Image (cartoon, rainbow, N blue to C red; front, side, top):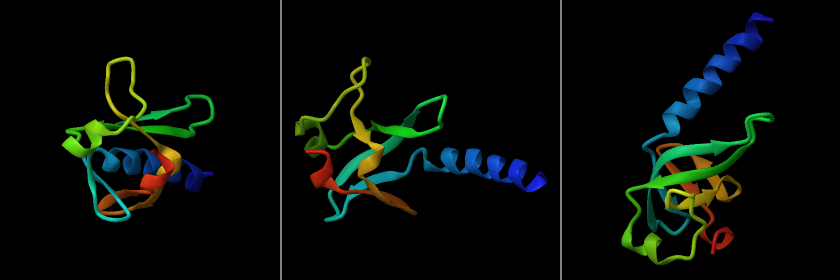
Length: 93
């Protein structure tokens, strides 16, 4: 059981590490940074990345927005996480 508790802590730390990461497409277009993560509280499923500091290119796209007007990227479009959050641009436009 201790292993389960440790992995839960690792996951929380990992999600915090995503904040501030630069979001780019597979072709290298910069979208902005991860400002927040929207998730389903019951299942823990990740739903959206909330963009902070969106680029001029991103502002021109017809992306979904939060009630506050923040740009949202569906988490399903994320294809890699490392130094950058890499998204499949064709999945969001």
